[in-house]
Amino acid sequence: MSECIFCGIVGGEIPSRKVLETDSCLAFLDIFPANRGHTLVIPKRHVLDIHEADAGTYADVAATAKKVADILQSKLNSEGTTIFQMSREAGWQTVFHLHMHVIPRWSSDGLHKPWDIAPGNEAELDQVLQQITK
Image (cartoon, rainbow, N blue to C red; front, side):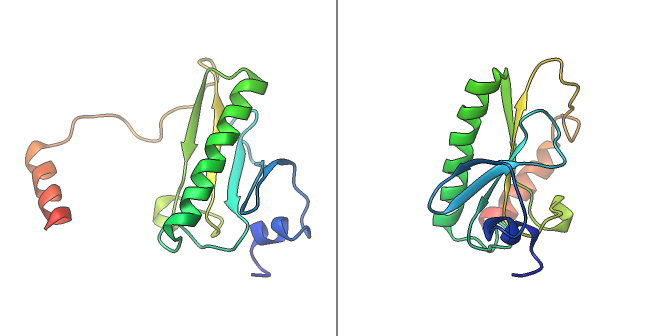
């Protein structure tokens, strides 16, 4: 995928600040960080998003994200971690190569939740469950 920026990073055509590399994944600092140490974890093989990934590829990305989270917490002394995986345009994906964001967090960092937490409507929750499970 010559037009994919993440494939360019994997191939070495585009520089990155590598945090961790495994046989199947690469983790590097995000150049648009939400917080200090914000790292992206990608599969080395081009996969569009979670819906295109097989379970093994997604498991590799998730396991690498766990390793990165532990490294960041240990080395940066963060107080918490936020991990995001966004797929497709409606899901906020902007680079169309599967990736997870691993973001170190501190209580005073000023980041906020992407939605307001509010209880769901009981009837709607039941209806959605019916739709998903039938």
